[in-house]
Length: 316
Image (cartoon, rainbow, N blue to C red; front, side, top):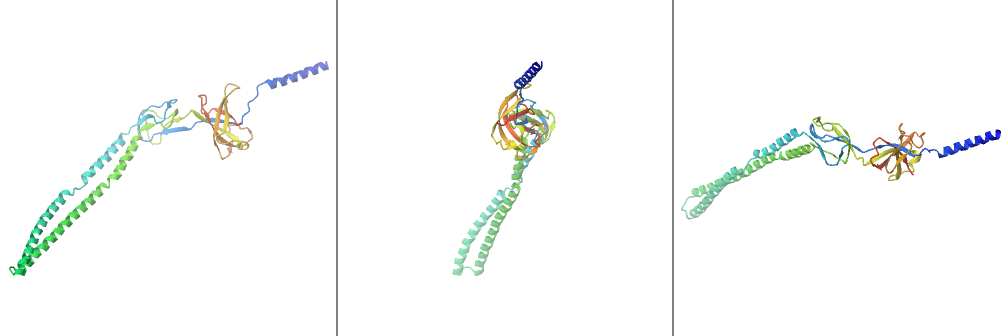
């Protein structure tokens, strides 16, 4: 009986060992983390009512597509006002032509008179030599010539002064044109922001506004992210830090059923240079480690990966 009991005991122990060795083994991983995406929050850049907004959660939108329009009638009126101010500048300028022509005609008449006096002056000089006229008559003609020459000089100065004053006035008026043109360019830039243009290829994750609402610069309209690749933000211990490098290929696993895993290939794209306390929701290789280093692993998404989903990592 004793031998039989001992034999049964040995049989049960062997059976237990076989059962344990054939049973399912717990998978071993080097790091854990959650998936995240590079999210872009698209905000309004102009104040006004949303006249159109063609965005819904789950939509796939290409980069550069116009997804909405903000009412920009007030800004358009500002542009028209500035353009009208530019056009009115030309009316404030002075045309020096008519006044200058009048003075030039006067100068031409004076030149003709001077030419005639110079001829008389020469004739009087000849008559004075022969004693036909007196010295006073010769002096009188010389005085007339000198007086007319001074008048012509004054006329020439008047022409120059008028041109200078006119040019100065016109420069002062037209100097306002360049700032106004820059103002038009600035307003045109604002008008271009009335169209809401999608900045990246991606899927709409959240929608924060509806058509008909009034928005303002900086107000979030929707959130979009490129889900074709996701980043697994995992954490490794200080002892593991020396075993990883940028662009290193690793294996990433997600749950697939109760005890199965789906495997992906990933690339380490970022390694933190600062340690941090282990997040409560993350288990590291050494659960006793207080300080860990964050890494990001870029994984191509086949549609099964979701933001916030847990993932496991094997470094080797």
